[in-house]
Image 1 (cartoon, rainbow, N blue to C red):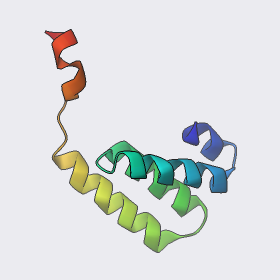
Image 2: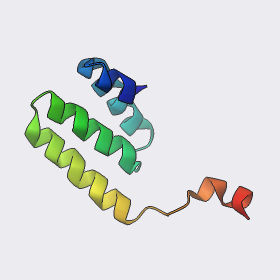
Image 3: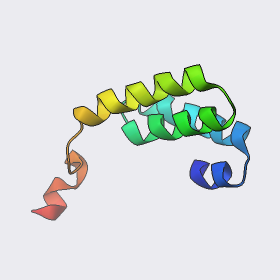
Length: 74
């Protein structure tokens, strides 16, 4: 949803959705990256950089396959 809103230029709503998503799951690097992209599109480069750095840190420690789907893969 936030990706579509970002593509449509509805940055404020996309930002709200992504900030809500970060509150629900603060370890999702994809969400942090998306938030960084939206903030960058709004010209908020400092906050975007912080989000991108957080996303990179989280991505380094995230599993290749999410733990929740491992039983289905096996």
